[in-house]
Length: 160
Image (cartoon, rainbow, N blue to C red; front, side, top):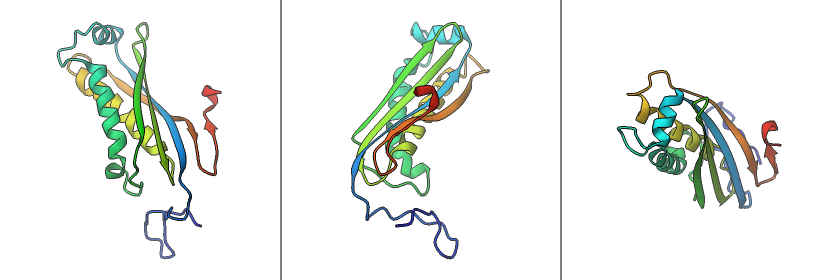
């Protein structure tokens, strides 16, 4: 079974995973949002004019996990069984670590769903705060963990 995204003529194709057995797949990804510390404090105190920044970002991230095949052309539509977005905040530095976890019983992994989820949640934080803080940055989007399928477990070095 080939897992190439190109056919013999070099044309892009969706990988055929129909011959693979479904297994429980889990992936966790993270994106880091950097804001001014006073902006983060306003988020935590519920003083942002656009409302509950982290609550809206959480919902956006969960919805994004389910929309991944619409955004990434060759990804497979999956029946996602679990999607969650969590935030770790550091009021001193103004950083928000956005962590997305996605789980499905499928023939292919959910890494892209977790990466898209974390990214869209981070972008939502940016969108809801850009009026108060023009210097917001988003960075360090990374896969932290994955398991399931033949390749087994992957854990990013910082997670070990």
